[in-house]
Length: 69
Image (cartoon, rainbow, N blue to C red; front, side, top):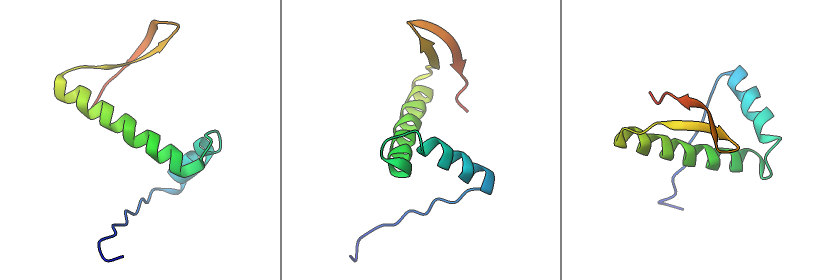
């Protein structure tokens, strides 16, 4: 296709192993993992723009905050 875009993702060997390890635990593999990562990145960027923070929670209790750089 003439207007088709292709995005190439490259990373270190260690990062590649981490991505592979994470994707093995997600139904849909690498593609689904990258989709989830992009959504999370969008949420983080929006939070930073609004001056908000992200938090890790469990059972409605905040376990930690994430510093968005």
